[in-house]
Image (cartoon, rainbow, N blue to C red; front, side, top):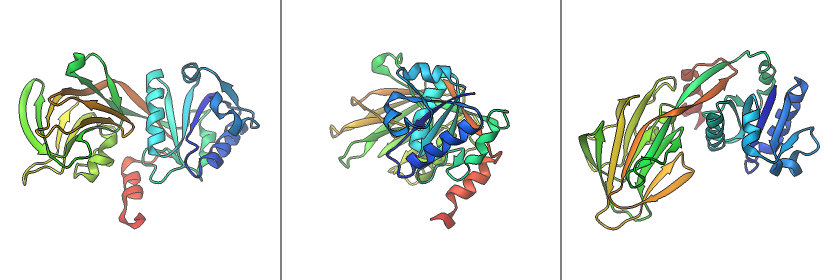
Length: 285
């Protein structure tokens, strides 16, 4: 079994956790590959270092990301592009999309025999009218259209399958997948959706209305959001909190289900609702 490990060493416990992962994998006879930039940190642990990141991902059987949710989501996009499953190991805080905690690495012994479940996670595709909707941008959690640092409110016009359906005045709009329903969308009042479902969630951020509510659309939906600022504010499209695109006033952005999907490895055979209760319980606050 060939494994590609993608750690985020800016996390406090990531170095120690990654070393433990490497040792566990070598104990079960797995080959371990890492990017050449990791040579100084892990050069004495029997790892094979690769000059070509894309070839490393294409040639592995499974991708393992060590870090927080952002690290795992970033790695998941690379895994999805190559059609590879991904296992996230939490070395951050919440670790909602992680499959294992750092003290559960003994579970890695189940990888070679396939003693795990694959969970298919839907991704979003966003594209801009100014690009004639030809350049896709991808998100596993969510895409957020919002204002810059100034405090002026934005106007949004939303269409569903080419039919205008509603207008919003708000600080922003969140377009989320079921995986992202427990992230920013939840904080803004959106519903919790089982990640095995296929749907698109539209959640307004601080809407200037007493009756505005989040809306859930089917997987075949195509949403277009036109954003206008009457005060020449900056407007941004943010994808999974890591990619930022400054968009012009009046730009129209299309959102739909992506052809790509993420294959999440579940080694612990736990249900989504068990994870929700553990990660989001008030007792953990």
